[in-house]
Image (cartoon, rainbow, N blue to C red):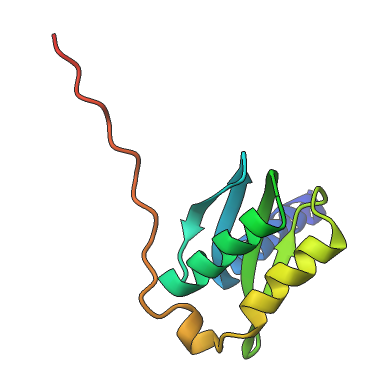
Length: 116
């Protein structure tokens, strides 16, 4: 019983810590880059969109995390090693302090007004 409670507590702590170090989550759907959570500087998002188009990435999930004094990119299994490396190069060129400069959190989807 005690081991189970401890295991659940450790799992919750792990998930909480992981969320705290995640800077941004992005999704590629149909070749479009969408910010799902967090945010990055607009120039970085623009560069990443260019890579998605140029590398013809159709779908995938990207997570940018803070690790010590730099950012690290994790990608879903659907991307090739070349595609992942090009995206990592974009993130690696920008200092962590400037990576978030001017970042905006994604807006909640607006509800459509319906006529009654």
